[in-house]
Length: 309
Image 1 (tube, rainbow, N blue to C red):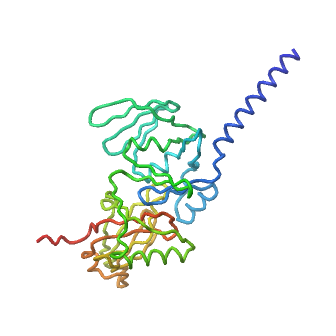
Image 2: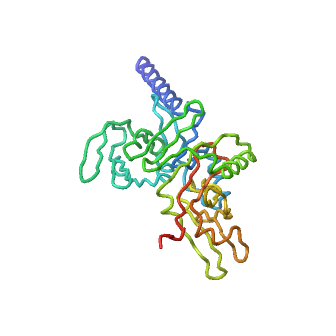
Image 3: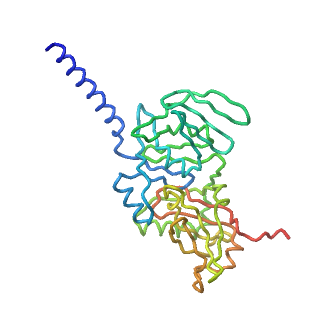
């Protein structure tokens, strides 16, 4: 009987050590990478920091979704917040995770290294790192995003990961044409202690489709809005500036509201930029002064009046 009890205690100790090592592996990545998705920072915080962030933005805290970690040299990220910013739809049923982006669907069982990819009415089996369920939070490897048309660039020395949809275009900034723009962005960054340089423009083709122009009939206030998303990550779009021939022509006022991030052209009779430039500007640039990315979002002005006639 004593021998049996000793064996049982030994087994319990061994299992406890295995569990401890497993938890240690997951939490070993104390230096969380800075992740940018289509030019916007995907922020991860501790539980208390996350609750405080939702409180500061007058929004009810939803749930804690965890933080990225590395296991067996594979970078994992929480599905929920990441999918929200990447506009990836997903379902979880009977341990089967389905990821949907545009015309692509991936189905994979939690823990499996084989997934089924559906595209253009065809299906194929793909090999991938397993999806993980930890404390009821789903984690995916960033490599899986490649099958959903995302390109991954890891800048190891700076611990930065860029995740960009493959339809996005990236171009070197014409420093002469956009001299005023670059100077303004650098000064804004320096004002908050950010000395990182800017070298590229990133054109997110889908961003122009989600920008909405709203006018208040009561006082003629006009604003451009971006839906905030479930996890507030779209609040990380920063300041907005309107560009005409490479020159700055307007700065709408940025206000975080309950359901949207708004950029006001005017509030009543108070104008933050001339209304005419909303129609005449060539491009819109959005940047966050705190963002350390070398990419700056620049898109064609979707509100420009057509000059083809």
